[in-house]
Image (cartoon, rainbow, N blue to C red; front, side):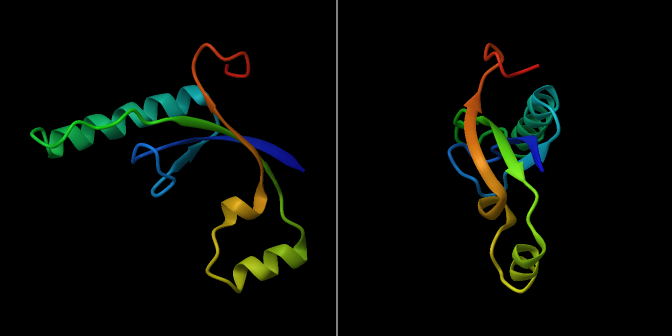
Length: 95
């Protein structure tokens, strides 16, 4: 079974701390809220880079894969990721 999620970068250009949502609009809203809160905490900090929102097609792992994941420190994302692309509001694949 495949499904789509949208991940937004909390650190521009990095998957570290990436957050996931069910829709592009939700990712956009949460990313803006996160950045505003970050700016409020550190208004004199360095300028933040532009974060990207990624459209990710994932697949549910089978039982042996799930057991391997539960027994290892590996991240679930690379194991289940089928495809990934950066999206913008003008992309046809976005709501």
